[in-house]
Image (cartoon, rainbow, N blue to C red):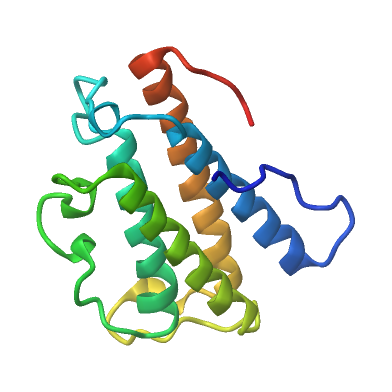
Length: 169
């Protein structure tokens, strides 16, 4: 089931608004994948970007969530995150069903929201080996809103080219 696509309240504290906009973009990603078969989720429809598939976007966003909040912000290990491999490995989804990719993305989003809730927005990241870890949690959230929204826009195009479905939240 796709999470609700609701804008945050017009008047609220900063964290509520940031996470609200972030969750809206995440829910648009899930919505754009709703009803896609595994075959269509892997179908490449943009000749110059063959990895830009619905499944590839979901996988990439899942691992990007992990990178920014668990690795860069908390200072955790990058082991297992394919973004640290060569060749855009996080975009390759092999035979993983779309439902499994979406579940992994939803779980990672839940984990990211737990991290966001537990820390001050001004807190910097902790990973000693990556320059981007110096950013504040606020900066990371804003960056991830941008990243997720950009890829939600890609999914608009991919979905329309796959089966003609279009719509804005």
